[in-house]
Structure formats: structure tokens, C-alpha cells
Length: 145
Ligand SMILES: [Zn+2]
Image 1 (cartoon, protein in one colour):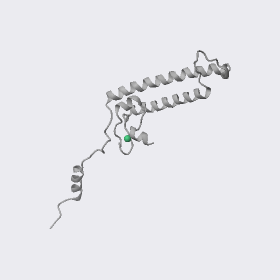
Image 2: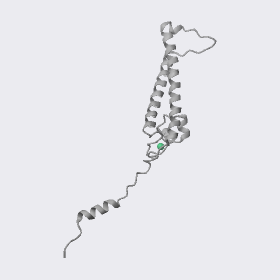
Image 3: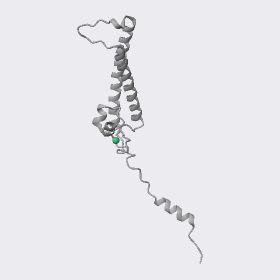
Image 4: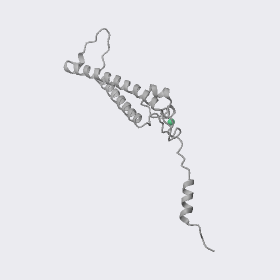
């Protein structure tokens, strides 16, 4: 009696039969056309936020040159205090940062994926992303935080 089957050949055959199944959810993403649409929305929002920032920067410079505490209120128009203005500007800066991160995610095509345990990479709804394109979590996860 002699062994004719070589171990090496047997193993090779088995390896070929192993199917490569991609992990569930890994291939989910928005189409290039959709990503382009979101990009336009984000760029528009960044532009808007930067304008708001510019306007407020100018105003705060003006008041700094004169006397900020005695700024005249015209026709009931309210003037933001320096503190309020600072908060507003910080909010705009944070907003721009969040949107810039969203642009990066569009670039690597992971934009819109929610990584909470429940979604596991599934897409956040288009309607939500249109309102808040900087979102990285689904509504349920956000509300639980
Ligand atoms: Zn989620």
C-alpha cells in the first residue's frame, strides 16, 4: 500500500473553494451623483457660514475701535454683546469644521454612513443629510446621546 495523494495538492484545492463573502454593510454608500449633490449643499453652507463670520468680524472690529459699551441702538435694533458675538462666531467656526470633515468623507466615499452598533455602517437618510450634512450618526443614536 502506498500513499499517492500529496498533502500540498489537497490543501490548494480546499483554499480555492473558500468563498470570500464581504462583511455585511461594508459596500453600502451613496452613489457618486448623490455625493456630488451633497457636496454642493455642503459647499453652499460653508460659504454662508464664512460670510456670517466675516460680517461679525468686521462688526467686532468696529466696536473695538470705538466704545463697545456705548454703542447706539438704532430704531430698536439689537446689538449683540461681545460675549454673544464671540459665541456666535465660535459656533460658525465649529460648523465650518464639521462641514469640512463631511467633505473629506465625501472624498473617500464614506459620507452618510452611521457607525452606531445598530446601523453598523448603513446609510443615514438622504432627507436628514440634506438638512444636516455634517451628521455622522442616525437620528436615533443622536437622540440617545
Ligand atoms: Zn445609527
